[in-house]
Length: 73
Image (cartoon, rainbow, N blue to C red):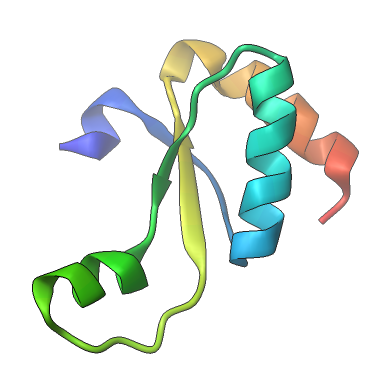
């Protein structure tokens, strides 16, 4: 289960998630992006969710959280 190996950092629009992931990339942090709408589409279901979740490894969480604060979402 993802919650046992990663910590949820952020929940927001795809545009905000892309911006955050770009910043995390510069810090050599590889996030996991969870997209409920895309998962549902691939499974053949419709869903209205447009927001995504960003998860990071627990060892990188504090560093990632500081980067998130700088973005001022």
